[in-house]
Amino acid sequence: MKTPQALKIHKISNVNILNNVNVLALILTIVFCSTNTALANRLETTKLMRHAAKLSQIGKNEEALKIFLEVTRKEPNNFYAYNNLGMVYSEMKKNNKAIKAYEKSLSINPTFPMTLNNIGFLHMNMGNYKKAEMFLKKSLSLFKSFHLASMNLGELYLKQKRYKKAMIYLKKSLKDMPSLSRAHRLMGELHKAQGRVDEAKKEFDIYKKLESRQK
Image (tube, rainbow, N blue to C red):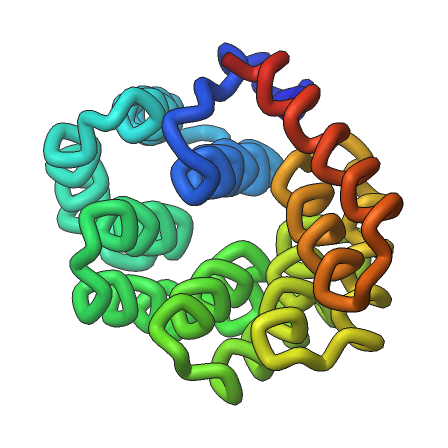
């Protein structure tokens, strides 16, 4: 998987699928941050957040957590930092704290697509499907080519056996990001659930090939 070129951060190691997606989202969040004039001038904050993202990438979530907490203390209106704080809490399976961090981010900026995607993804994993759908759809309405939101919506509908909608959003995700390995795996699961064995095998093979490149 290619990292966003705006920052040229090292390739993501595939510790596990969930971590892979979360690390990508952390990096994308910093990319969003770098396009904001006010935050771009805070070079120290940007460096700290990039460093914390890399720490989370290699599993040092406790260290990453300390950095993001420090940033939120110094900059209480930094919704990027609250979003990343929520992601680290999510990685640590501290779901209630993650939800609170995401809600804080959205209270500062209700239209930030990354946080809307992340809180939707967490609600999906917690079984709160209606809330997940609401947040993910809002994220995608604000950023129409957001491949993570499309993929997560596809997974949500797959979980609910709403296969037609799952196909729409997984196809969209792969159109926007063809190298998104997890989307290929989900597409394979969707084909398998509907009895399309050959198509499922093809997607699983693509998934394995992409995963091997990221190791």
